[in-house]
Length: 511
Image 1 (cartoon, rainbow, N blue to C red):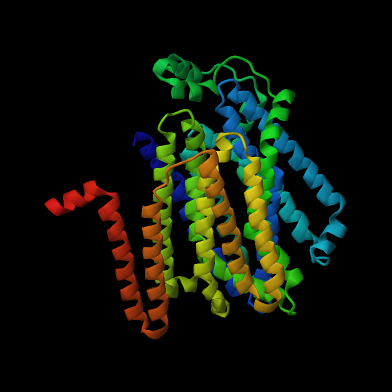
Image 2: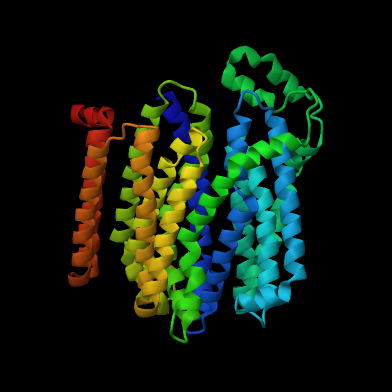
């Protein structure tokens, strides 16, 4: 239970920064959709470019975030060497990538459909290269449990980004799509300056400091304390270990494959849409889909917050005897709270729709579908740890790859006829396939006794509530619909509180 409390604490910090950050970032959605009409296709360009960026970020980090946590927690490895080696690797490949972009900017921008705007390509691709480098420094903060600094830097980036966008699009009255990309580059580069200490630790021989002396003096307090202390110990270590590179790449390449497949599950529709959609308004339709999908991203917020705390937690718990029971409980609570968030968004969709411009409202019907896909993605992420813990990450590559092929096939076959609705359902099919495969194989390779009966009941209850909320949304006045939706959400929350938190239930009964 203490471990779950620690997980909950870190999730709260990471989650708060993620949720607040995404909420603040939502301010850009009404801004962009107000300045760029659906017909102009401007927001479709933003949606398309950021899909490419998400895919490239996975490629440029090539699984080294997870690999860093895995090797830094191995007894036989020196965590300091693991960190510095990882940072140098990712930094070098990011620099090479930027050089290649500038060398081939002409044919690259033509291939992507922006021959008249090559700056869109080089600006965003330079930005993603810096992001890839920062992923390792952010992972280092998570390893050292510096959740507050992690959250502060994430929020600082978003505040800077929003402020500069407001200055250009509101104060200066601009409406050019490209300035959204230029601003992103400036903000991303600026955040790197705040990693001076973390970058310096990778390139110095860790001189003994007052802080490290105090930590060393308390090293007897336990294995976990020793492990945290170890990264700041005074003895010199290698800054780059070539042999370690081989071992890390051997572990990370399947993660890269599954990462590419996983991110394609999220972005393939937005990348493929301009190529497979038959109408002449591809960017306009893509913009409508992208804007409506933003409302559904609360699922992505919760999944991301959980991941930031869960990944180091799982690897740190891998040697404990009760780890499987803990993973099972964590899965149940993850599903419970994502279902609750799902119902809140569906129940108040008529209020949340004002996040986007009115000419984008026609895409609101994709919101529940996209959220369902995000929940499946979160479940798949939680299931994925069985093959990471037994160092068989190739299984993840197979699961994600098969799911990705399903998603791409549905997009190619049905987008020409059904437009962006096919994109939404393709996400459900892709994530659902990967989720089911991971569970079935995982129960044979690394069995975990998940409370499937409880999970099934909660899913059915949420589905039943969603059916009724969507039904009376079309037939009742807004005030009545919102009132009934509130009652449905409270009922679901009450069932959770009654069965999952007996101590709270008993206190209420006594009162």
